[in-house]
Image (cartoon, rainbow, N blue to C red; front, side, top):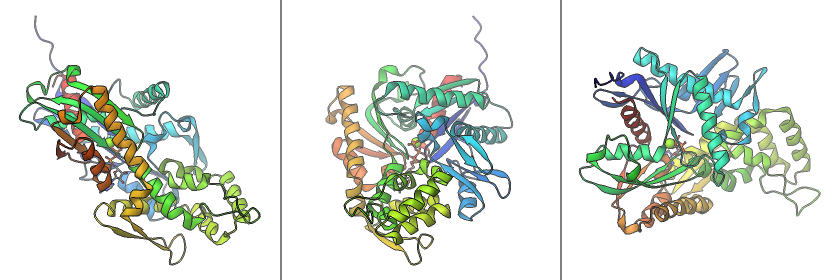
Length: 427
Ligand SMILES: Nc1ncnc2c1ncn2[C@@H]1O[C@H](COP(=O)(O)OP(=O)(O)OP(=O)(O)O)[C@@H](O)[C@H]1O
Ligand SMILES: [Mg+2]
């Protein structure tokens, strides 16, 4: 029987829509390639800025820069975290209009698609999207709904064929492209929103085979990622300087309401503080406060819309603490001369619970696979959060005999998805 002609290899895209960063890959005859999606960068921050002043949309670094330079408008980040949550169907005010979160994700995916098509010089209507092992913890129905929501968004953006692959399986495929012999690898993709673990028998002989089910021993995931580390650092070390956990003037044993502080410390909820109801609530808090000078700082951040700047500065300090024991957080836009010294040990204490949950997830994956830690040959680490020393130590302690291999922290999943897309497309 004559073989069906294969479609050109680049008839399909592979999108790693990450909580913090995204990539778009394309299989080519010479191998998987990540496309330049912002200038010369193959990664783009998952950020969108509605520039009200210039009446335009900006994406990625460009979006963050416009926000940082105080263009009038709205910045949204970490939108992947909204999938599977009640927020997905809610709308948020942008300029004079309200726009639904799912439509904002659509604008971002549409931008990735258009940019990739511009690079390739042709339209592409098939896509493999990465997905975390768990979009939503402990709720299979909502987890499934999250994937369905992402699929519906991708279809609305013009993709006609939409497939999904687990992000850690993608990372395993990337790792596998360089191995010389069969190994049992524990793959840990520790990203901005989720930590995803797979135990995979990697094998050069079976690398490009379409059906690898028998080689995937187990997958496990938990909705803990770098944005949770940012949040904890912020709540423990920064928000108290804005009145978090301080008391009410008339009820000295009662703390001020904490919801605003949680929103301000949570990347995908910062935008919710812009409405009128938040402004009224904050004025009331200011009146209630035993230390109004601290709540005044909170009011200033919300009024001047510097919440993302604050979250970004906390994130920068978190990243600095991966290499140093101490870092200084300067916040002149919160209050003149406000600077906070942060230590790695205080950060580790504040985030011990998150680190424990990641290690527990690794143990759960081993249990599901029915293998002991000693059976794991290699611990493959990827994703930005794998740079945190305490996280690395906890991962290593789970499989102490395994050799540790580092992936391209921000490119492994995207490259692996592209390998998978190439196999699917038959290229
Ligand atoms: N050197 C570092 N030390 C600590 N954290 C880091 C470092 N570099 C990046 N990060 C964190 O890694 C996270 C982003 O990682 P990554 O790009 O792998 O996530 P993502 O793929 O967008 O998210 P996800 O896969 O969970 O949807 C951010 O929270 C960022 O702050
Ligand atoms: Mg990722």
